Length: 316
Ligand SMILES: [Zn+2]
Ligand SMILES: [Zn+2]
Image (tube, rainbow, N blue to C red; front, side, top):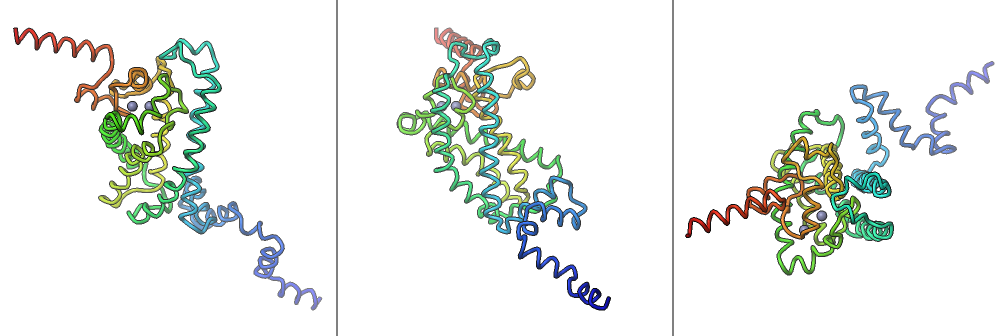
């Protein structure tokens, strides 16, 4: 009896934990173990915030944690969002919604595009994604949970959409200037009838250049206001990827966003840019092209013709 008691006092909880650490290191040092520990102590966090905190605690290296999360998220969203469009391309019944209906991309074209995009992601975008965390940290971007309130995220993301669109409009016009088009932007225009996956089919210079609008705008915002969470940044990138892939999809459905928000560009708007190589330079909205008279639509062409005729009449 005395021996049993002394054994019990020797093998207390701490000893069992130490033995488990040596014998079964993975049971202690796992992501779900961190999640369990955080769930026990940080009761104010919701399920997703606990998942988030557990990831950073498990990695124990914020740069690595943000780098891996950003890269994996980018790949999953990019190819995950492109997949429904690949399936739609294989469905003849969907052809009536195709903007340039005679130009459905072949499997070979899609595969060639995927190869270049993947190469681009691993060689050009990966180092840039890796640099994001130190830069975000330097600008005071928040990392730890809780996440910001929904209204704040919605406001900041809406603002990023508007500002990125302005950046994109002027940079895209610059990319259509002779030498820039010839040496940089021409690659993106290889497909005159685009498809979802072709959104990031572009020269590395162009990716860095236009990507500055997507990544640089929130960073400048954070440097000026000191109020931005990395999670808001992720949500913004996800929505921006959806916007870019959908704009290249080549399909315009009766339920497409432009039908209930007339200032939204969408596939109808960007497809015309790829088909005609001129006009419709913005990414998300139509207002910059409208203000600067670079819209490419039957109504805009008609409007310009009427203006010219009116000017000629005045001269006579
Ligand atoms: Zn262009
Ligand atoms: Zn494009």
